Image 1 (cartoon, helix red, strand yellow):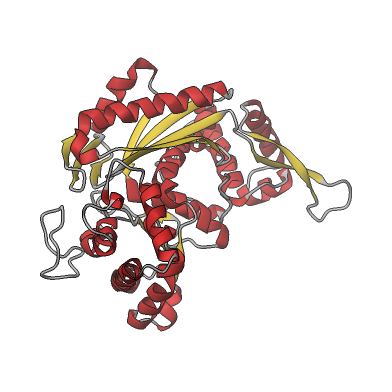
Image 2 (cartoon, rainbow, N blue to C red; image 1 turned 90 degrees about the vertical axis):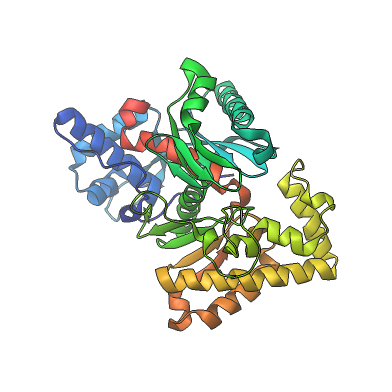
Length: 420
């Protein structure tokens, strides 16, 4: 599978801070990154177009492209005509098949790992069923480290190497200290996740980063949506916990202390079901995976068993819906109505160009979307939903881990010569 990474160059997701050139070497690093990001965001183009798009002189571009080719980050592609008379120019495109980033997601009932090369192509992926709350942080981080090692081994066997890894965790995370401050659905509080992962991986560990799972999912979804000129979106996770990642003007919105996006804990049902966060009636108690399972099946039904793979459990429910099972269909109708309620509030407040429904929402998209779209259109105050579309994720449960892999690869775009 390959993600379409093309979008407007002016709308790249800001994952790392901007470079601050202070001498010739740093200016060159900055310009190398500028060219590489342009090719990522806007697709293959001739040297003349790169010079025009960046404002850099042609001789400078020629030197930069030569260096990027030598580093294995770009290559000559198909011929391209730029409107001038004479032979067509060779287009330059992202290569980077020998460089991979790894994303590892910790979720309530599974761990997942994805390795992506610089072109967004999957080099390795795996998901294992784990009851994370019951297993506890030590066991879970043991498994996470094992998945990173497995991904590294697969990447190396293919003749590539891992330049970084990112851990996607639910709840409130502190990206500066690498700690999971509070993740109610998995029962973690003040867990030094990155230090523990480094200790397990040893001295050969790649550079590691930590980020909230929904924010990483939003990054992955944005890199797909930007190809359709969508640069303002909200990603809604659709798992046991319901989180949100917000992209505004192509920028990831973190908030004053990095906690923006805790949309699952909007209190929308006073007197409703208790939430893992300690409150009552949170939106995720109405539309999270637990709500679907509660409405659709009895507690002893195998679809509740967290030791079974989540997608196999959802496939079972999907078969029931396709077979016309009344209880399953009624459950989906209830979820759709409550989903529309929360999405409409988000659209009123943030006016996104799109709301992307991930996780299990995407599995049941054809059952949920008609009612959700109708309910959102009925509730949103702005005409025509303020220009917002409600869309299903094309990445499903892989979005957070993919976002982690993209985040790990961001270092290459910031300093191509240093990482490659």
